[in-house]
Length: 397
Image 1 (cartoon, one colour):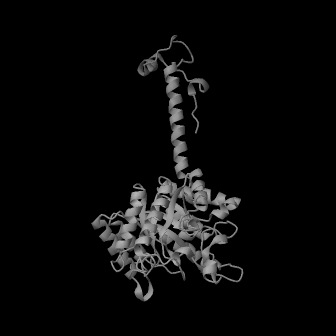
Image 2 (tube, rainbow, N blue to C red; image 1 turned 180 degrees about the vertical axis):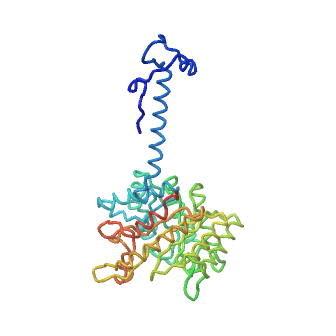
Image 3 (cartoon, rainbow, N blue to C red; image 1 turned 30 degrees about the vertical axis):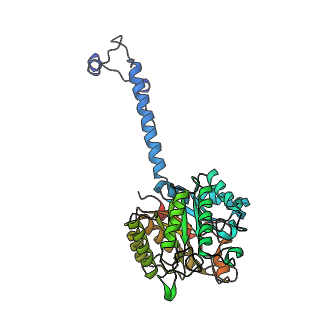
């Protein structure tokens, strides 16, 4: 944008009457080039600067976001991923993580088998690596997980603890771990996968923490979970406390049971702030309408919802490659689920379980019959799912 100064380039002459109407009287009425006062020139300069600033802002707003993180920041939503600390020394891994995500979660580093080498000790080295990386790159951190029946150390599984002993051990664990990261980890999955599936869907799972032997509340439903939430709140009153679950994304017996628990917790003053839906999608099938309705009913309780472990597994060949058709169908599922989340103000985070197919649990879990589940391929190139996810979370114009 440019402005022409006709007073200097066009040599426009004005009459005394013209000047009188404008409130500008030249020193010499016969002058061929009237001299405009400093105030008038200053006004033109300010007008030019203002117009230039408006144009720059409008141009910036018109530019589409260039990364997942930029799109999420503009939409005031969190886009996160599970992180493996051993890979942070790999330049492509670290650079992609920092560029694309504003939230990180240690994939395994905060689980019992990593943190607790023996009953008296804690090993925070791996977890600290993830937290320190996130802080350096202005990322939020989710903590996963304090209470889970899997990935527990052998000394605990074979320890033959009594309920009082186990209760004391769990309380100390929760308060030590949450307390260490107070002010650094903004949200915790306090408990993970406490409800069963299959023919027992909707019932509490029989576990070390519940009734084998449990921490003193065997047979009393989710009272033991309420106690864990209270311990976590005592350790960090500012952290958001989540219950995290698999296969509960849609409305079904398991999510019905979790809804009943969450409603009871809210009624009884148990400090719960949100529900995490893992969102591991298989067979390229997801009931989007049911997922959206499920998010709606939990947020209506005043809870936040996080999508915590999303991936969309595909059938792959011997080289780990999926067909172009399946990659496009995968992208549509990513888009629809992300759009369902952002359509509800209470759904505040979308997180994938890893971000590159180079490091995904799907291959080993499926004996390499499935894979290609994440937004980036093994060479860190964005896949159709990446673009679909980016567009879905970008702010609407």
